[in-house]
Length: 195
Length: 167
Image (tube, rainbow over all chains, first blue to last red; front, side):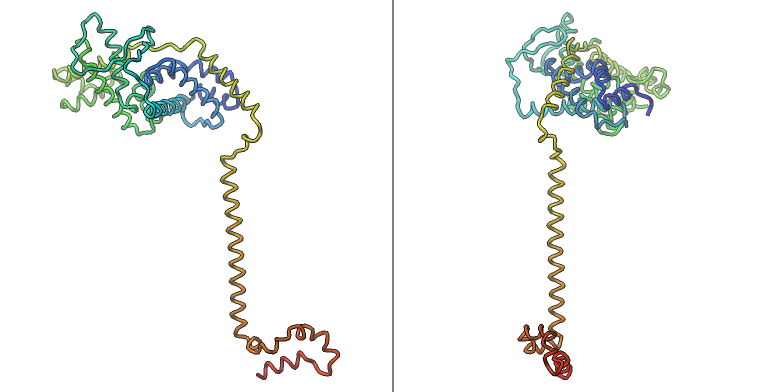
């Protein structure tokens, strides 16, 4: 395995080094929060779950083995925590059609929207804002594995081999996941894409 | 290269460099096929739209919150009584296994002893001495023969053995 500075940091964390742990939190908070946010759709909840991810890293630091890159190990924990959250929500659904959705990028609250497959494409003036919302909706409509693979590719710029390790599947299965996800994304966004 | 093969190469076109020689046949097909060119344009645009969505910014105090929670966890762990620190997760099954082992050994030993005794009883049934059990009816006398022998004018043990052999 090539030299990975984060693995070096994590080995220090394993020995109880808090400064090394803090450095990893600073470095990875953004991709971790963004990955979780795209999965759960709520920034406050994404931060709480990301906090749980890092606390979990600290708690299980003694079990860390530098057999893979640190990011692979970290995002495996991220995926497990997201999966648990998705399962928890499936058991206790709480979403209401009246509940407003907070847009994390501009902080505005918009009403909960149900996608209408027969809706006409929006006008050019609102296309960018609408496209952003549609991307979020299309992403949340993807199956969990496809969505996670896409997010790892985007936020972490992770090679396919590493994504395969996080997803615990083969390289060819990972390529297939990403291809299907991109195809679904294209199909969902087609009415909103500029020619 | 046909259309299906070309569209299967879209990810290579998207992820790889434009100089990748493996993508050349797909690029040549795209230049010649309008349908695939449209499909590729949408595929690339959708991906770019996904990439262009702004990332969310973590709260400025996120690191402090994580470190604060780590501190709380550590303090709580230190303040916890010793009882929960016992690794019950491992100790309970280990205790159960040890108990089972001891019980199994006990049962096995008992079984072996019974087996030995039953073999002895089987052998004893074939011994002449057992066939003449009436001789042993007064066990106290026989067991005390050594002690009373000097008081007799003959050896009772020898006499008894002779009687046994002769029978």
